[in-house]
Amino acid sequence: MANLESALNTRFHPAVAAFYGHWFSQPLQASFKGLSLTLLQPWNEADYERLQENLLAHWLMQRRLKLPESHFLATTRRDDRVISLDNLSGAVQLEQLGVGCVAVLATDLATFLNRLEPLVAPVPGEVGD
Image 1 (cartoon, rainbow, N blue to C red):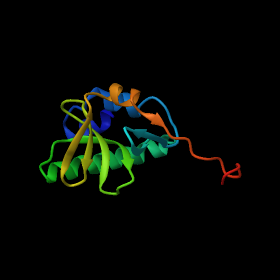
Image 2: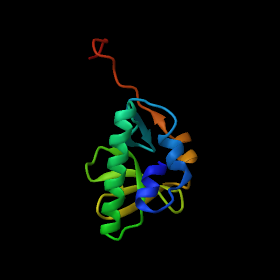
Image 3: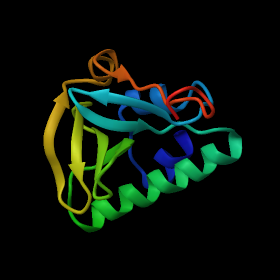
Image 4: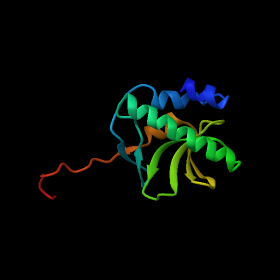
């Protein structure tokens, strides 16, 4: 994330690099207190670059709208809401795009992740499909 910090002339909350900078994975389905979400993770190096471009676009849009800067972590079923990390406090929040934080979900990323409940997608062809 150092390249993005340099381009934006800012410092990111350390939890952002910890969340995105250690592994490749498919998106992970989970629930937080009944809120279904998909944790975003890059699949590979090329996808990591695409993720950084999307994080940059999100950041610049927030600046343009004069909203507190955040980093998206997950999508929700609603297209206009994401789970994000507040860059200043490190709190995890439910954010309405173009509006900002509508609810604080956890005081920090570790607390948020520890409270997630994994959602297991059915395997195609299993009984009950």
